[in-house]
Amino acid sequence: MIALWLGHESVETTHGYVEADLTMTENALGKLTPAGSAPGRFKPADKLLAFLEAL
Image (cartoon, rainbow, N blue to C red; front, top):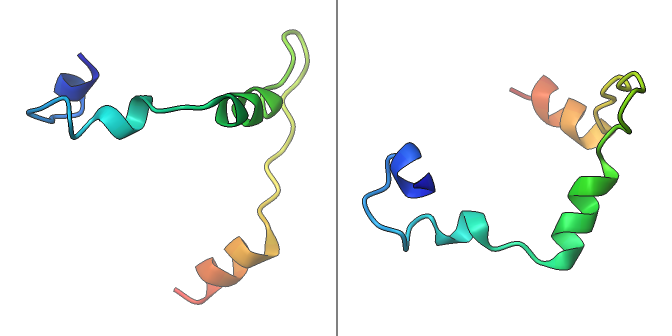
């Protein structure tokens, strides 16, 4: 189903999107804001700001 949503014709091209290990899951969950609290403001890293200014 994900492959169809993304416009892929085969499952093989979408397989990379569903490969997640425990570390990836923990990192993603660690970035979530707890329910009932206000979300924080995004603060880009200096490296990202330098890249954007170079465009």
